[in-house]
Length: 64
Image 1 (tube, rainbow, N blue to C red):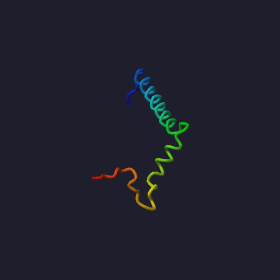
Image 2 (cartoon, helix red, strand yellow):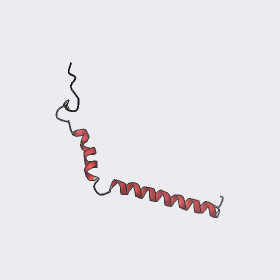
Image 3 (cartoon, helix red, strand yellow):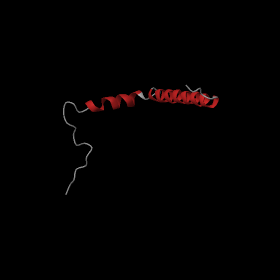
Image 4 (cartoon, rainbow, N blue to C red):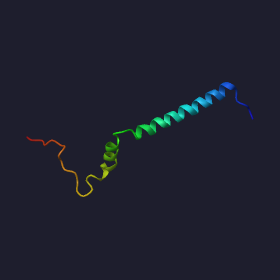
């Protein structure tokens, strides 16, 4: 089995540190203050028109 050189060990440890920092940033972004409303809205959007179909409120009527 080959032993790692000093530079390879430093590079490997820096990579692990960068990966952990990226993970911490992603988790921190998900739990940032004020994001709860947007996340709840996204999670519940598929159930909005569960009882009846959506209306045509967002579409413009074509008048001739």
